[in-house]
Length: 181
Image (cartoon, rainbow, N blue to C red):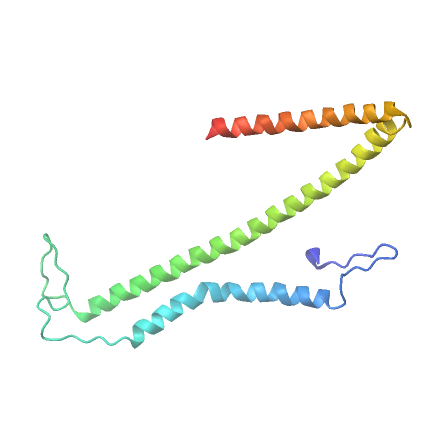
């Protein structure tokens, strides 16, 4: 699936885990791509439709006639309902911009999380390979070379050295992180 290239299967192995996997991968990818316009436009369009359906009723009971007053404001007799509609249109543009920012953040976070999982997967593969090398090189060649008690003692010493290095690395990082905070 990577870059939509078909790879050759190794001997006695299938390329895919199940028969309809490539179809499912395309469906999920295009479904994710179709969600981006929905994320971008659904909320602003919904707000615009609800604002349009809301009635604009003014009553004679309103003393300020819909004008908000504070301590330092002046009353402008030229304020009309058209001025109110311009503010509402400006607010809609802000809503569209705000939603566009949220959509971009969401897409970037999705890509970032995917990259983080891929890094963890690569780290896991590297750890498995290093463990195999450690077993092959150290334990099987040195520690388990001897069939007597000397083999067990050698394996214990090698394993203790590895544990000592791991504990010292963890201790270093722990104290470094505590000091940074």
